[in-house]
Amino acid sequence: MFKTIVDNIKASYNELVHKTTWPTYKQLTHSAVVVLSASLVIALIVFAMDSVFRTLMTAIYPN
Image 1 (cartoon, rainbow, N blue to C red):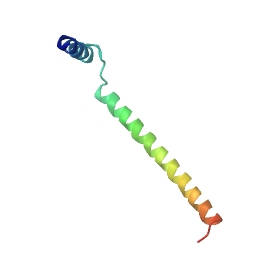
Image 2 (image 1 turned 90 degrees about the horizontal axis):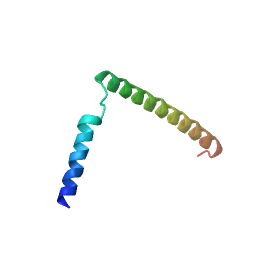
Image 3 (image 1 turned 120 degrees about the vertical axis):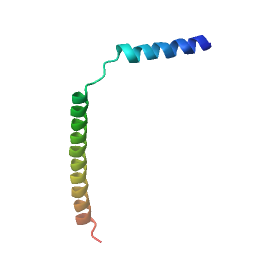
């Protein structure tokens, strides 16, 4: 059983070190900018929807 665990760890290490392609710094930076931009756009859309909904609810149910 211990040999099976060690073999699995060795296979995982081998795949991680030799078979995985890692992004370059430029690719990583570009991906991070894309994710941050998309997050900002989605946050602004949700904010706009929330503001419209709040305005409608205030018009329908005034205090």
